[in-house]
Image 1 (cartoon, rainbow, N blue to C red):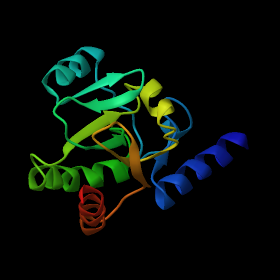
Image 2: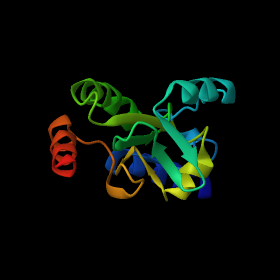
Image 3: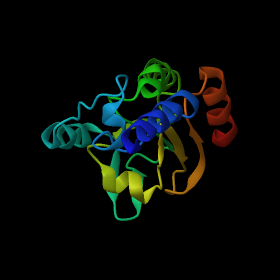
Length: 153
């Protein structure tokens, strides 16, 4: 009975707000949410090329730009829907905002630090490393673009 309830709760979370958990527990029973985490080596390689660094204080830009962080996972359907939108906005705001995707399965400590309980979660971080706003769940491109423009000015 408990497993049935947990499965229904996971489906409800995916349908209404995105995905929650880390893919290794409750949501792995859902047919739509399958875990495929990246290796630590791939993450380290990606970090070396990125314009940000992860410190005890959180995520900081190394080039003085604000950062939009997408906390997501490979097994999360709303996260996958958001991916092309995020890439499109990344190209549109190149040189004005850094866009970072953080896999919550590979970096659970960072997700906890930012109190990410549901994904996708977009967090806009100022040049100084201060959180300016966040959204939870799938968002339309126009909504995200409007938020970025509001906080850039």
